[in-house]
Length: 435
Length: 188
Image (cartoon, rainbow over the protein chains, first blue to last red):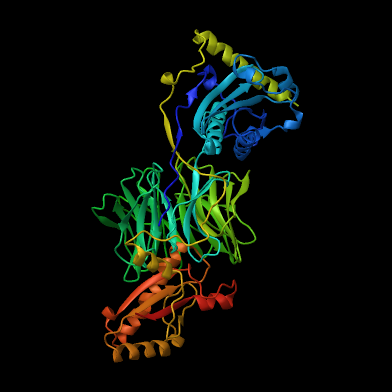
């Protein structure tokens, strides 16, 4: 039986401490490559009554998030001269010369207080040259939500410096085999690879998790009745409902931007075609017909075009179709077998995987088929790309022989990391929208 | 080290001063009252830092036993009195070496008219999951069509694809892959 989520996490009232005048200042141009990294200090948090490990744990999450952007250099705590005290949150100013002396142009301080089984976390970002608070926020939530709180403040830091919203509080859904099992279940993990939760638990094959635009629903294929069907899971209350039952194989591709329909591929009589299925269950309309295999629809941000895979040329390649009509345009020109398109939420670029030289690598290409670029390649297979909501990162599966892991790479190639390898058979990652 | 940076910061300072001169007349006060703050943000729980799995299989809720068993059975290889037939990479066409097996299946079904057959389509681990699901369907359908040409009614056969999710041979080489590109026949 599927496990219910453990209660809603209430981050009640992120309180803005000081609406700063400085938002008009562009400290960092996020689109200027090769810029020098902003040196930031992240001293230990003041902890009052709460778990003392939060003192280092919260800055670590923030630090890892800032490093992801390749825009910041987090200075080593061993160099810090000033100790942060509770008084710094009640009017005592920081000793800014101490921070400038070690090269910190910004300082992030924080305080965690226990409130029953909740924590109240106050975070502040200071400009050590101007000596002002650039942004500050207070969060309240269950103690176990400390990573999500840290992610949210990292978003604030990025916004304060660049004017661009961060995606550090987003999550990635994926499939994996539980230890000792033969089944595939769906999991969700945070960007720090730490907070993993299990969504399905029916011991069959649960595949292809795909997020609704508001992040409240996950669509997936499950074999729990013995045959595949597409279900929708409500992540808020844990309820599940059947969405697509007709045909044989079926897999969700992506939701329409309005969230009212799901593009999915369904096989009938051995031919796999792409349908738009209304979430209110009223109808399924065929949008890409054909003999052979048409799978993996990924819709453009404006909802007007879809990228999909077809083997009509003899082998699987990625095509783009304007849903209003017109000829399909093939956009994959990498290898003899190209699949898994993911349309960037931020622009006209599509990621896909292609087999060339005996292995799969991740490519991106413009929607008009031009400017194909290699993004991720390794001694093994790189498959299943999925863009972050800001289009700046791609999560994908790396596999070699029996080993698999989820990896993230920035689309400019400046940063990458391993996200998760704690279960076997990990794959099919899908990056959540901002929520 | 900060040579070129100084002028950038100088420009920033100047910009701040200009903004202040233009209109930041009143010093903003620290808001500590919740009423004046942004609306509450509801978030979902992300419990713990570890993946936790039960050591004992969890008993399904009443009324769901049959459903749960069907799902679990999906992950097990079902016994078959027929051999598997095999396919070339990315192909679903019936090979010559499959025809004797299919003849045998057809004979058996025609002799036992009430019997039902499930054809499972499978793929090797290479390539992506969604595409392989559809390919497995084509492989199963391809065998069904061939059996129909031998006189087996389509109504006697159902098909399911497991794509690459249920390899027979867990190896990562051509020998294993060749075994896994198959249709598996299960009499129901």
